[in-house]
Image 1 (cartoon, rainbow, N blue to C red):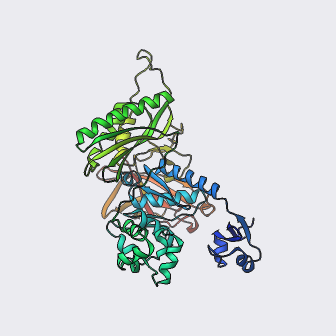
Image 2: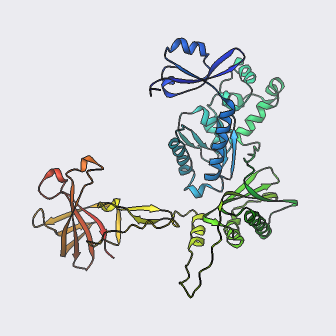
Image 3: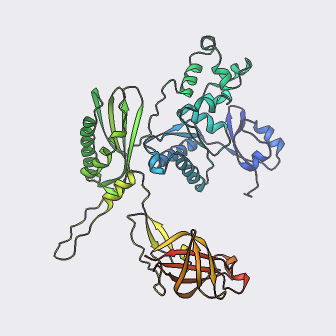
Amino acid sequence: MPADQPLVVISKSGSKRWISAADTAARKLCLKVGMPASKAQAVVANLTMVDADPSADAAALERLALWALRQYSPVVAVDGVDGIVMDTEGANHLQGGEDLLISGLVNGLRGRGLTARAAVTDTWGAAHAITRVTSAETTVVPIGGVAKAVTGLPIHCLRLPPDTIHGLRVMGVETVGELSAMPRAPVTLRYGPEVGRRLDQLFGRMAEPIEPLRTPELVEAAKNFQEPIGAAETIAKYVRRLVGELTAKLETHGLGVRRSDLVIHRVDITRQCIRAGLAKPVRDPTRLSKLLCDRIEKIDPGFGIERLVLVAIMAEPLEKRQAASSLIEEPVFDVTPLVDILGNRGQRLYKVTPVASDVPERSVMRIGPTADETGATWAAKWPRPSRLLANPERIDVAALLPDQPPAVFTWRGKRRRVKRADGPERIFGEWWLRPREHAAVRDYFVVEDEAGERYWVYRAGDGVDAETGSHLWFLHGVFG
């Protein structure tokens, strides 16, 4: 199908047929959701129409929710027929905060060919409303800012029955703010308690817990309490017991846990979650208990905890390895426990590996802290600095000749006189990857100042031909 061919999805009920979804090309032609199919065909002659498949859509939405469950939040559920809802409290820090979490979520979906809108708010109702009414891809509502964010939204975003929405509009009510300002008793008498319940959920006056999506293949352990608990020592004791139960179940399946979620059910019908991620599959109760118990201080028991659930959200096969004899080889020190501790504190960990490229900033790549070595090595023809700047920094240079090393240069406000210099090492642009670098060159010099400090500097261009570069000087690295 041509890229500009308009496409709509048609839903039907009895003899009625209407547009339930439209692509970008169709929306540009003023085709809207809810428009009768016959009218759409009359407006656009070359319109492609596809019958809706609600069961397939529901299955796809559930797969999307399971993906979000493993990647972003311990508590994920399907929200209507076109969305998912997540409780990200306790997992935001693993993604770098709320802004990075939802931007990463939207970008991840875009990479899979899906267009999405995401919002972070205090309540489920507000997030539902904002994502379906506003055009922004991502929205983060500050804590306590729900009322200001939703007052001007239309009432159809309140998840009320269509008949109720129609009746309110007949009365002249169009926005959430207008509805919330009306006396509660007459509205309840005429339309029932659902209107007030949805308003209370929207503004956070009534709890709306999210029932997490669970599948049979997820391994979990749970503990119910006849009397609510709240002391940190008591919580830690039962967390260790749950870890023991969970690891025993994982062992029967030959699995190790890569990501586990501790879900805390409070007596006030609210939930808290703690997520622990591991670099490699693990079945060691002591190690997993430490990761979870180290974050118990973040739990707010409120009036008490009535249920604890520990779920292995991501589990992978764990093979037993024979321990090597110390007579044959030296023991290998495993740093993954340290990686797990730092990673669960929100630290971004990585290591670098060589990449086949002569351009210095392209010759390294970040990989996971426990990823296998690629086997590549850096060329050792010329010395390389121990510290390479993320971005080359401009320096002011005085040189005897345009193609000679600097005699004096100024970097970060300090003037340095060059005592010794070695070079140039000429690096050419990667013209086979970037055609505009066909003539580009850099001339690198290792220079040493009067204090004995050594730097890696370069001139953009060959010093003569303007097509080879700007002839400006940059400092790219520092030798240890």
